Length: 360
View 1 (cartoon, one colour):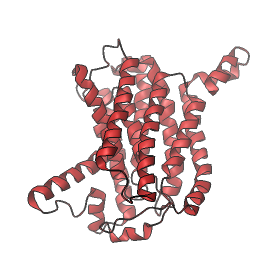
View 2 (cartoon, rainbow, N blue to C red):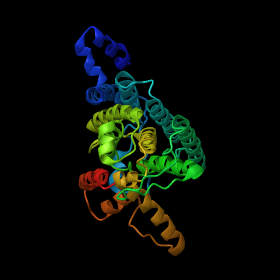
View 3 (cartoon, helix red, strand yellow):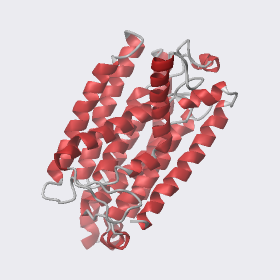
View 4 (cartoon, rainbow, N blue to C red):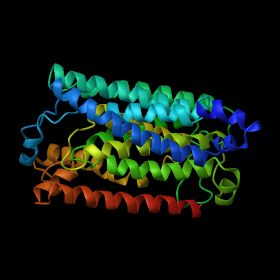
């Protein structure tokens, strides 16, 4: 919005020329989102407490978590508001990729919101897994179809770029649709599974969006893209502002979500952020790198699949408890220790993913 309002005035006042630069707008998107989240959180926390909208702790979970019962949840609403408004303020809101990112965020936030609402006010368990997955598949199909329509005529739209291999770009053709949908739905659910400790999911989310901020800026800058031998898309640069707003909103939320948390993000936050991250990965043509960038999320999701499969065939548990962060808790690791060590792993994996830019 500010880009369209103030940049045209640069012909009269040269100072407004700064609104032309993505770096300038990205910095202020972070600051705006951060401040907005910090301001929104206290009244929303008070409102959630007044409405008795608190977390329900499973009896079969870690006993140390029983004290968390009643902690306000659905804090993802803070992130959603603090992400959407700064994005509209500082990005070129007519940019197709920005609109698609906001669409993905909204669709998955709506699924998470309804799931939280049902869990907290009706059944106590949320909507069924099949129903939730069906809505996620439909949402991801809408997002991928929009990405395909925007990129129609682009020869790289259905190609997948393999990290560490310079000339390996297989064309999946129409199989790219289900592939991209798996990336988006997988990211949404992996983040959701990781959101089990105070600040555990939001830390790697911040780190992942920092990595994709870098990838989007590089892919949207003709000289950098040419130098790194990566696909160049001029429109991609504006996603840098979206990623920046996500970082700012997540940082503001982390202020209240870090141990001991005074609010949880709920499915409305984890599904929205995961779906948005997956969509950014698809739009930036860095789908495979998401496995590295979001390695913590991948490990969490894999631990659940391994646990379920192993128990089905052997009747025994592979881990003491899944997702894997609970396994380490059962081993005696204090919650903050698990959180910080997972963050360190996320940082290392993000750096590794960015190193692939010079290995293509």
